[in-house]
Image (cartoon, rainbow over all chains, first blue to last red; front, side):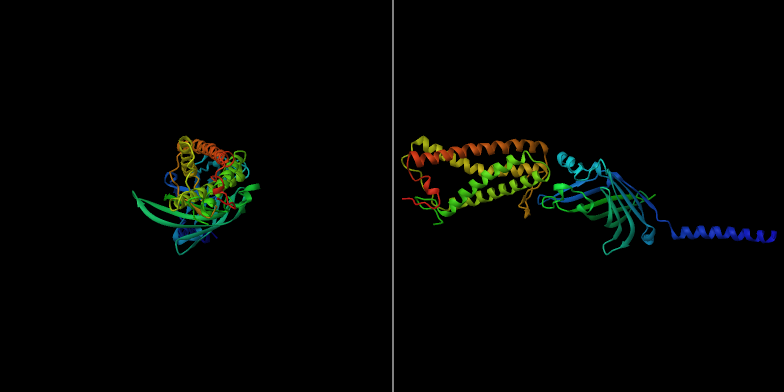
Length: 196
Length: 182
């Protein structure tokens, strides 16, 4: 009895080392930190037949990524919708109001990727977008460029996503009409992400 | 007859004149209506106002080109020098105003950062970069020009009526469609 336990100890120790080694070999993808000062998140829309744009100056990004471990990679973006800025106070107030983003009730929007795949031009993240209290499937296309800056690994991420505003109820009452404000909103982003 | 003659405005000149008259009246109605609106309705009315304004600018350009390539029916020889001066002044002012009123509206939109579209069909380039103080100045300028246009057009209308009913000449009739000029 005693000898069997004594024999089991080295085996258990070896198994712990083996399992831990296996996990690190599968490589948990590194988490990148957003450099907010060198990142932007913008949206473009058609207003009265003309292209207009605005930006979301406040947002956070959780990006865990490794090219060889796409299944374990994660992208999670939380946007402070209330901070939106279209360079026009009157329009910003209208956008924040109940008929559009209703920021008092829904101050944040969130995109959570559940799957990432390689595409011809980069990657596609498939997931859900929570906007104005509505959660719907959403796809985001992005490309990455690696750089080494002062010895740190940095990723530059550029991408876009087409959001149909009415799918999320951004446009109540008169704003449901797409004659003067288009349904298609193109969200684009340029992010600087720094490796740990 | 489409072209002007020495006694009468042709069909093309009449078309430009009366279309612009109708559009200018429409512009006042739209602009004054928009003041009491908000939301999509205001957006819609102002977008239509801008499209009509650009239309006036396009018609004004064609109108001047047409005028330069046609004879101009002369003013009656019986006019006194001050009447002749007043007629030239009014006409010149109206021609200038149908250009600069739309142009200041266009500049105003650009300065606000709202690009102008022509009936949702195509987007016009911005004339100036976004500039809030310039926008505020252009709002006042555009409005002042519009009321100046209204005042001079009223003078123009009264003069036309005077020609017809008091002087009993052909000045009004030669700009009216479906009439004959002796």
